[in-house]
Image 1 (cartoon, rainbow, N blue to C red):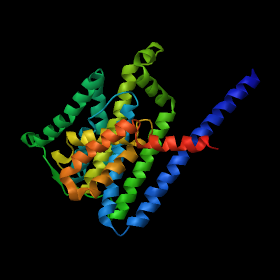
Image 2 (cartoon, rainbow, N blue to C red; image 1 turned 90 degrees about the vertical axis):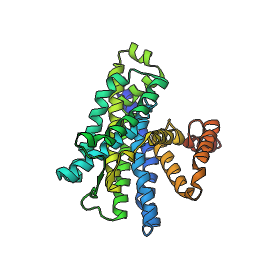
Image 3 (cartoon, rainbow, N blue to C red; image 1 turned 60 degrees about the vertical axis):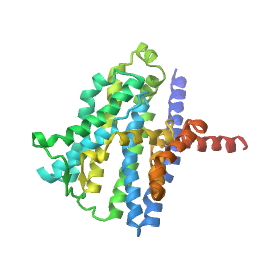
Image 4 (cartoon, rainbow, N blue to C red; image 1 turned 180 degrees about the horizontal axis):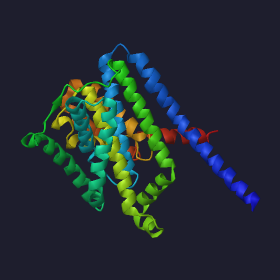
Length: 328
């Protein structure tokens, strides 16, 4: 019996070490690119630093959408929770006078609370019905803020301060990139945990998961609440970056974009939302000169990915790795 227990412990230890090694193989190059390479190459180019800062913040929000994909739900409401987070930071910093560092976690908590409350009834829906209702939710939240003046609220907030101690473009970029790395590590740890295993079992077969005692409704809401928290944090950071927030800051099109970022990068990879976001955000800037054709080019790109890389851009890297690995 003791020998069997030792074997189990050794197996689990080896599995944990292998998992950490896989994490570091991705995390360390990602950290090098974000924290060292980008500042080195673009420190004297504030416009592109702003592009990379924006991509980092949007990637953080996209990680939340990936979490809901992990339970088999197509969530097109992340723009709503980013907007909530932006307004919370805007109100607390400009009206109440709280520090950004206090306001930001409150923005995430507020978005998470809203997600928790609406998640119980909303997550009973499946498939296209859930997707369409979440898409409508973004527009509903936008219209609520647009008409908030009728009840004494501000339809828009300006002069939102940057975080204390972060006044330069390079400093804000490093803050956003660092936040993204923390978000990536947290979501990776989530998917590698028992909770992540529960999420995957729900995505594969909810009925089977329920039959072995998993509280499906509870875990759906947990995943959705995590998603909303990440969206609220991203919205708060972006409001500080832009120093304003308007009802038009996030529309239904933005919520669709968060979903597309995940699809483009690859739903099977935690890194997928980051790769997809940076790819499309940078492509948007490079194609700004032919803005009238951007929607067409995006559509063609998505068709190509769906036809030839249904598991996203990162699946290409995985296939190349298998090919070269098989030649050894």
